[in-house]
Image 1 (cartoon, rainbow, N blue to C red):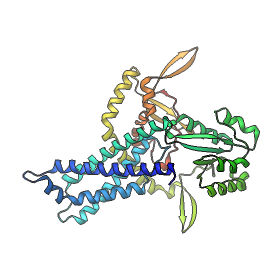
Image 2: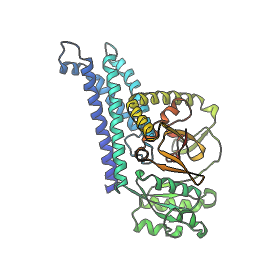
Image 3: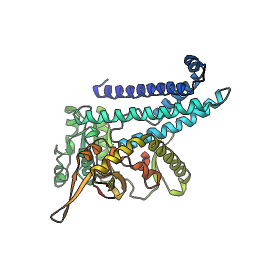
Length: 390
């Protein structure tokens, strides 16, 4: 197994192990809280073993199905916690249904509710600590992924800006290939190294260590060249990522589906996805409520610290890619210098941004329906780090 694949496998095993330990700890806490007077703890544990087995199996299956054990480098910390909360909410509902069927005396809420609540808290905390630890390691040069960009245009320039501004993602851009010399400055001005024409790709794949190739070329004009690039990368086992706006249409949703072994790109209009959107909205609100309830002590502490740091101004609106505006904790001190606004990060602001904690107020945007942290509706790295007064 290649060293980097071994690292990914080890991280996957650690995530599974941490979740198992968290559920076991939640089970122990639930037993302690619900222990009847005069009953031995061991006997109580044996009589409620079904709760542990069902919830553990369902949670591990749900987390695996939602790919929560797989490293998602470019996902914001808040989005990760949101995904965990949604998956755990679904696992709790299904576990309750299964236990109700299997348990002769029905679901005992005094055991099940503490089990779910404590498991949610422990899993969220362990995922939060794991995410922060991985971010620190990547900032220090560990667990990096080396990528090559093909094509110099606004899409690849935006990709470079996002990756360079987010060291915690752990991506190192080796450089870019471009046949049109006039386009070189688009990426060179962002510090990327020009590595020659696209025909040099084969040499680089053989003689360099690359973890992925990102293609940013128009499909209609470069279809055959893109196909050739994909075949070359497939031959040496290097993944290919394609940056493109295939259809500039205002569709409600788009997703990849399959008809037998035929992949299909589905574009769905609003009237076709209204029921699915309503269900997603309900789950979003419930998951956001769970997160707000669990993280409320952290939210209060951070808000108080920001209020002191920013002289009473706690929140700020930030405009991200595509003009989407969302609510964040304020991280910048604003002033005036020669009639131009000066934005300067405070020490607390830099700390909050470093670990993504400034994004926690997005949960309130989800509750009000003005935002969604679901993967189908978000663009990783699209949020800008420029504050405006709230």
